[in-house]
Length: 497
Image (cartoon, rainbow, N blue to C red; front, side, top):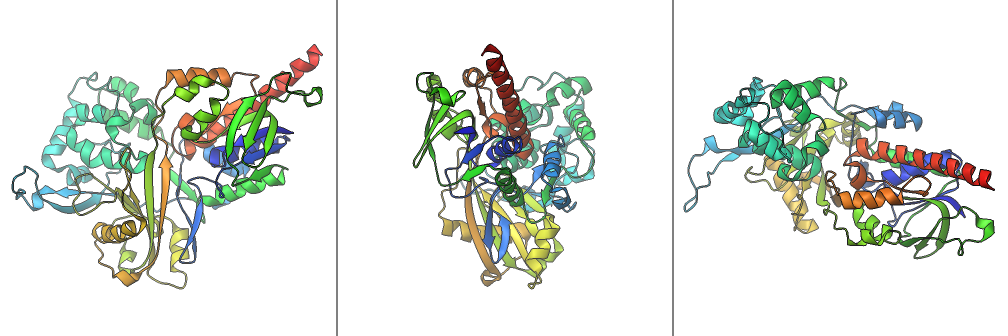
């Protein structure tokens, strides 16, 4: 019999199991797939151990760094190359002809450094020289009107796109905010709630009188240094370490064992000798009983399981996560040593001749990746291209994606490397939870299920928001509270007895 079962072996579930195991609880973690970590997993390509998905964590709040310290990984934390990212878009000025029978301008692909003073692509300095290169004169003039508009304009906008368009105009949305939102959240900014991705932004708009001033203020409050960091060797090192710590503390980690159902046990079902058992967990191969339970899967899997405890959750339709396809290329191209597009590039929707929504030049961004790639192979580089948006996953086959990624990389980097220069390709498809959206019905039901003394917790990106800086602290805090509640409940039971 288990003190705690964790369902789901992504980072949220691993953090929960780690904390419980090191608190002395008998813990079993159950993962449906045969690998752990979800998008924070690894693959081997051209002899290199690489991240198959997530490559970094946001430094905001400092919580991830503190947990890495607890895990003995502080010395492995690395910062990215400060060269920064670029943005690619259609340069209509280069070719002003029109497509016959349409009003669409034809232009060439153009790339410029992403303005450095922004938040989610929103500029914080409307006089920055690099802004004009991206927005052009009319777009910049419209953006600068933000300083003269009443503070109330856009303050009640529900979506990020609406807020920025009302304050700074459509060009800022299309060339800056949309590429960043697509790259970070795989979502259209007009579908993202402002408060979900930029807490405090609207309040600062009302206080400072302009959106640019609000962004500048929020940026000034951030800790100095890069907004993201990673681990030497890749973020998958975190998954390895969490598993090691769970097992070293006596916990069990079981993969390839999907959970089919959970239900609460009544007093009649629980023998006197198993006092405190609350839940039964059914898998394909085994049945478990446990005092406490953590559900750490994505919403699509969690809601049907939780419906075994609260039937109304079986009727909830949660927003589908975006499907993001990552294509990794290992390329022998010494011309890329010049870092022609900084550490990578975000792509505006109107950019011609490119299907990818973003490309990370991983060997330019991370020193460890550059050293690993070039070891024995000078001029070898790692490129990661992403495809698919919310509601519009890529429909290309893996082979088509490989060919498209090579073609896109040539346009994006401006380096026309040969086909035989590509020495390794890999395709991985990930589901990225959308920015948290308010769902009062779901919140109320889960609040009841997870009330103090229930022995139940629900963690993961669909509850915390996207990214390790949201997922890890929520899982950590939630399981600590669950353990404390269990101690308090046991003490009350003992006093009654």
